[in-house]
Length: 227
Ligand SMILES: NC(=O)c1ccc[n+]([C@@H]2O[C@H](COP(=O)([O-])OP(=O)(O)OC[C@H]3O[C@@H](n4cnc5c(N)ncnc54)[C@H](OP(=O)(O)O)[C@@H]3O)[C@@H](O)[C@H]2O)c1
Image (cartoon, rainbow, N blue to C red; front, side, top):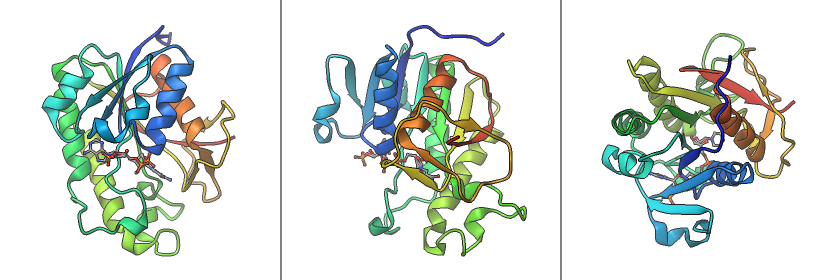
């Protein structure tokens, strides 16, 4: 029988970003307690409310993860070092997602946090030919490939880890949008990648909080689409 969590303490890394904010809102709307973890609290004063504790943490630093996640039931990794092509790749650390995976594994294990939800990147998924989407220039801009490679390395790190942490990576389709509404439903699938798939950030957050409340997938990467 699935475990059903009552009110949980959820820590969201990257809480000031698009996915992070959606997860914070979804978790709050269901009565969970939320800690919003960001690198610079002064940059996100609006996140701190009566219901949200705002803390400083870097997702590549195990000590700050442990401190932020003390007493948490679940943690969400919604961090991205790259928010759009205009940013360029001069400052991208190719090991960013590996460092984040290592730091989360260390920090959360130390604090005995049970559940970790991670957001994946569609381009790291196999396509219908069996290759990776990121390797197909018609499907994914080659100039963004360093970011996709870094993401894929982070997944490999988690996937290879011998860990008690119950992690799950939910991977949205290419069209993950703030403009789409929250429908409250979504589809987790093991089917090959759907080029025409779409999902709202709000429904991605619904799927994440559902998997915190009722953990149904464990230590795997699962694509998530709208219905
Ligand atoms: N279609 C897809 O597959 C798709 C589309 C979009 C996003 N995604 C994935 O979804 C996840 C979230 O993306 P998003 O769109 O929400 O990104 P976003 O809006 O750019 O937000 C990312 C957040 O990460 C924070 N951050 C950066 N470096 C950090 C660090 N070292 N420690 C802690 N926080 C840090 C940033 O805050 P500061 O820089 O202000 O500290 C920012 O608030 C990422 O894994 C991304 O690749 C997938």
